[in-house]
Image (tube, rainbow, N blue to C red; front, side, top):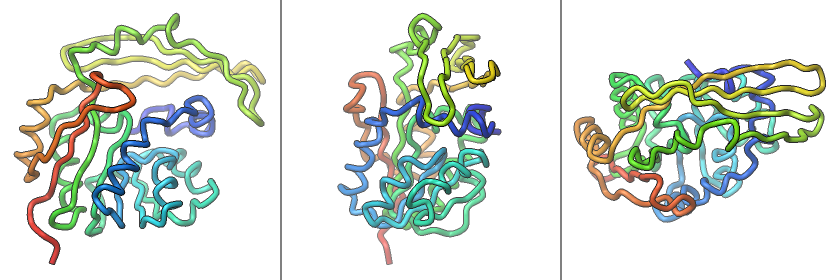
Length: 245
């Protein structure tokens, strides 16, 4: 089940204007070029920002997401017809033989149930050709990013074209072991509507992720630092063993 900020039409429509800085995607674009990827699966594609950046470069892209409202936003963007959009998740994909599968942003951590995570890894592996790579990021648990998730640190008022002013902030709700739950609040000045979206992320340490990847049939090639957030995130590069026939 996608979070409300992705599946509510009004929230999906303002998701990009409220988070316009996507410098975090640049390393993924560089890796797609590094690996010579011509067909890419973007798991948890959301409103399609990364998928469309790839498509603009001539890459054959499939974007999959469980939030229909986010996919509607993605389809309506310039170039949206260049991407194959699938309403679902990594466990319900047709054969793709992709060169690269990605999970950007919080997509990997949003899969909180251990069995769902295992199924996601198996689905990503099945969608890759032999020798294809799976790349995703997770926050370093020891950095305790959630300690900055409060109204004082996150409150903003954004002027969204065609919508008006939107006030937003995040509140930390609960920390239970590796699970961190928080709530985004959105206030639309035009009509005073208040909407909230609760999210839970699982913080996995490096050893746990590497062990899960190996258990699901991947070879871990590399664990990189996120260049836009050094020391705060792991970027995993895993490969489906074998060579393309």
